[in-house]
Picture (cartoon, rainbow, N blue to C red):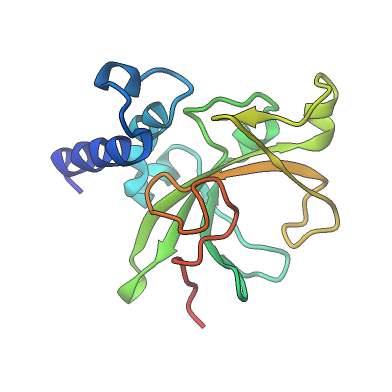
Amino acid sequence: MNLKRVLASAAAAMVLLTGAASAAAAGTPGTLGSLALATAKYHSVDRATDDGYVRFKDVNGIACIAQPGMGAMGIHYVNAALVADPAIDATRPEAVLYAPGPHGKLTLVAVEYIVTKAAWDATHTAPPRLFGHTFMLTTAPNRFGLPDFYSLHVWIWKNNPAGTFMMWNPAVHCPA
């Protein structure tokens, strides 16, 4: 994807997701606009892998994560170094999510912030929050083989009819 298309996609996402926010505020750290600018490069899966994101499969070897009746998250590419760091940076999500399309083409649809509960709770008294939303707690055992963790999905690159910060997107589907 060429730079013009990436920038156009980022600009479109900012307009859609930040509503009436001024152009100056769109790049302010901690906003959805800054997230769009920071992750636009991940429309290229190669760029994501260059930056340390690796395709993730659940404990059953499934790459495309779906929940019957709820929708799907898609295919996760996770940066283990970011997961290991308990800091939350709005412009550096721990995972980028792709929806599978025709002929196996992956399309960037969302990002996910992930922090283990033990690491977060060691220095905080409340669950993490970002963009005005509290992270969800997933307890162990879970399909990801992780200890208890907090997460927040942000459907920055694909509309989610269930809501921008919901886990499952009914408009995303995994192949049968």
